[in-house]
Length: 127
Image (cartoon, rainbow, N blue to C red):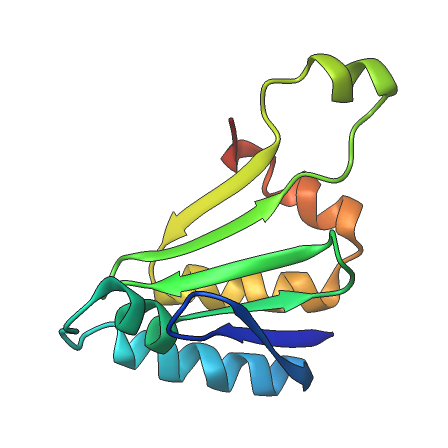
């Protein structure tokens, strides 16, 4: 699994390989940093957000904005058919929750195949 962060210009900065424990440690740090006030949105994004990826298209991005405000974004990759992909209005996952939900999502992303991950979080599909 690859880890990435963002720089002050919101460009992706690759951080190298990462295991689940390291991802959870980064999440903990970002979560704690979510309680800090920042001078700009860019500074907040640098301190409170990171991403995990298996490939160019298979990723999750996690942002921590406070105690009950953890968000996870990902693009949908698994569709039941070509028609489903073509006509579906829901192509993204946007998951909101607290710290426990963030930990659960990170563990699931490491522990499940993509199709099973998407099946578990299907209720969070959006446009």
